[in-house]
Amino acid sequence: MFNPQTQKKINRFCQIKLGYGSLIILIFILLVSLVAELLVNNRALIVKYEGTFYLPTYAAFHPGTDFGLDYSYEANYRELQQKFLNQQGDNWVLMPLVPFSPNENHTSGSQFKTTAPSFEQKHYLGTDTTSRDILARLIYGTRIALFFALGFTLCVYLIGVSVGCMMGYFGGVYDLIFQRLIEIWSNIPFLYMVIIVFSVVPGDFDTTSRIGLLLLVMVLFSWTSMTYFMRTETYKQKSRDYVAAARIMGASHSRIIFHHILPNILSTLITLMPFTIVGAITAITALDFLGFGLPPPTPSLGELLKQGTANLRTAPWIITAAFSTLILLLTLITFIGEALREAFDPKKFTAYR
Image (cartoon, rainbow, N blue to C red; front, side, top):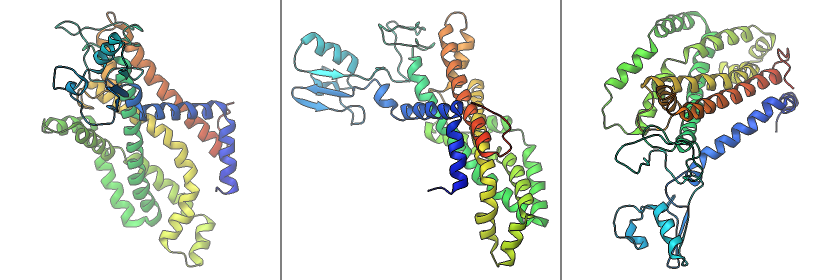
């Protein structure tokens, strides 16, 4: 599947236990977040009622009347489970491990309040200042952060690699014009642009559209650093003998770029990718902390950090859970990046074992 040189690098990465183990853990976290609805949800996984099975998690809306309740809005499956248990009949409800949704408020009174971690109430990490389950918000917030960072990295690489490669390969007027444009674009303050853009966004924008808009703004102001790197690397590779040989043999510009230059830069791009992901997660968390990131009530690590710092003494479990999750993610990705750098770099700057 891979050429011998690439396979050798992959084998070297697998031998670096710290990086390889971090990759396995990160993949597990990503898979858990993908099936979050099966683990963290206020909808039941399976309901058996009068001989009929229902799958509310991914199925249509089920009013309470479907299960013999006296209301027409969506059934409260936790109460339904308790009702069936009390009846001791053939009806039963299977709930997820964490039977709460990330945006659901849990309070017995008229005021919201934080609740300490409790296994009895199944709030394993407690609740936040608006009585929402912290574990539920962490799992969904981690999923959003990871996929946002992956989408950000993909877009930055597509733009930065394309523009930078063209600048380094063709040079001349093309290179000069893009350098001046990038210098002007880089001097535009990113945070101010985020504030301006989201101050004029209509309030009826749905969450997906706002997340997409935030991703677009971040990509537009982040691709320039990758462009400088690709320009330098392409310029160095262009002067190598193998490129001159390809030109003599009549290879086109596109063939030289895609079949000769890019494969020789690929290993460096791979080693930079984890650190780009770390930067994206840090950036989206910081924007959420400042209030310019994901729209409420979207689960996010930055929003939990903001709550935690504001309630450090009264609810220390909020900052503990959010900060630990963020540090775990960044540490795992950093270890993967260091292992990739050692595995793909013949100079072996580091020696993780």
